[in-house]
Length: 456
Image 1 (cartoon, rainbow, N blue to C red):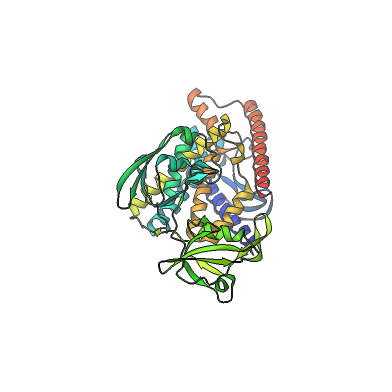
Image 2: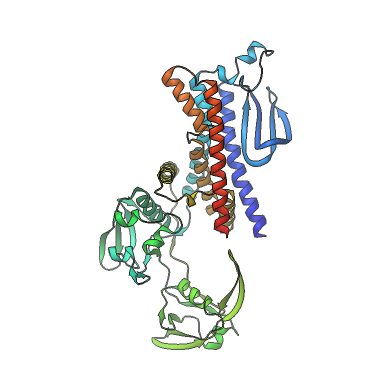
């Protein structure tokens, strides 16, 4: 069932974004008076098609689902000697350079526009997210964490990072990642209950050394603050009930290891299948120690089936959540800013991968995208729409890279034409196309390799 859901989520995500991208090219081409011969979703052999409209444009579905294209009347691709003069006027290369630039740029622009629309809708609706209240680990492998050394403490509510207001966890995480990419210090303003407001600094030297893959705040020692580990329900007849655990008990430690929150308790219990553990609790002001044997059960994970311990009890673990809807104008403004920030961060990451400052392991392909599409779809509509918006931005940025065969490569040719007054020589364009195709295939192979390596 999960596989089918993942496959469907992936197809809907990528298919819709390809359609919007190609519609951008199509609509602007029609607006500029260029004749469109075919609109294809997918690449390769056409498996289904129908003709519509005054120009009898062929609307097609092709065999390879990763991609799409708009085929315009183009003298570089066919002999147009027999065409009537009125059709020749609508041939692509006969248009002035600014029209050609507009047509090519319309695809990425459509991706950015749909991302703005999705984010604006989410901001107007209001998305429930964890607040910016944090938990801070003191040590990692006997070494103080960066957050602890800077002075941050569990229970602090972050209000700003580098003077950028922060209200929810995603904004805090985003700002920390940007500081890590820019290799600049992160000035974190917090409110501490009963003590007032403080500002702490995570040094640039620390952020510059972070591996940007995975949980960046976690590598600094920062996590989402979760409630105290209070037992919410005990299932009759289970290991917890037999040991005497009751609803309302506050969990203190397991075998002397302090329990910070419900997630930490669950992790300890899962690792103790079939073993006797001493669970310390506080009940009605008194501390008790309850011997308990977690029941061994089989559970499926991303790495296969493993044995885990369960005690048939439920512990509080959800963080404080907040949902703040925005007015339409504010929502659009926030959406535009979010798209711009994502674009600049993506470009910086690409630049750092080229210079070797960031690992090429961060290049992801269709398998990882499909996995995240499935995960976010299972999390709910808001998470899935946010993911689609992020992928749309990524597609827009990738298509603007100055690589021949991509939109950015064509924009580079036309920019040179604007500067020199002459079009790029045909022979040069052919060589560049071959090199660009080789580079694109190399990137695709690297992305698939990274995807498989993550799965293994």
